[in-house]
Amino acid sequence: MKLVSLFLNRTFKAPLWLLFRLLYRLRIEGAERCPRRGGLLVVANHQSLFDPPLLGVALPRVLVYTPRATLRRSRIYRLLTCGLDLEHVEREGRDVGAARRMIERLRRGEVIALFPEQTRTQDGCLGRITGGFHMLAAHAEVPVLPVLIEGAFEVWPRGRSRPRGRGRIRIRVGEPFEVKQMERGEAARRVEQALLELGAKARPAGTAVPVESAAVRD
Image (cartoon, rainbow, N blue to C red; front, top):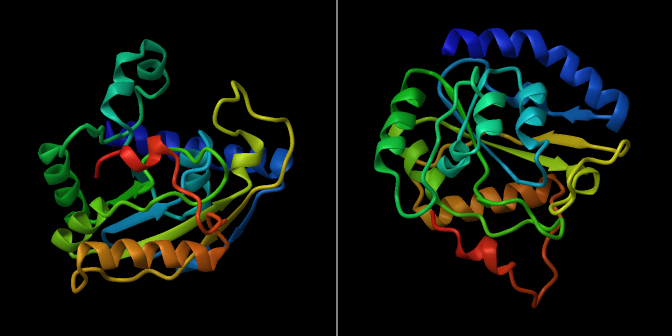
């Protein structure tokens, strides 16, 4: 499966980049900050269904994604992702088995991509950053790389059945940092601050995170 995923990555990365470039004037900033070797945990904000392929074309590494396990109930989803190397995660409660597998993969030098908001934004603002990524990075002793996706919400907002035909998408890559000396909450705040510094849209003071986002467990 990994060989198939690697083949698909090498085959479709350039065409996808060109598609995003032509339709959405994709611009990538800071990709050189992504470590070229060793285990790495990528944490990004979640704006749209375009986010996984956007990360894939923006970063110079092959990424392992972590979709929710319930998606496998869909035959269409299974058909579209049959060649991809994925780590499906149970969202209800703690998926210990998936966590152990991901830690082992990180230790082997692989790159795992997570969206710590755990759900797509409903209004374009940055949601609550959950701290589940901290345990993975701390146990595997790998750096965390914050990545901001900007403009994908306007192109394909939640609730819209298909993306708009034009728009403007920007991806900004931050500096990697270690979390093994941090507490879980401190690591979550560090990621939130990094995304805000990269240009994430902050939620207006006094407004609450939408109920669905706040209710998702780590």
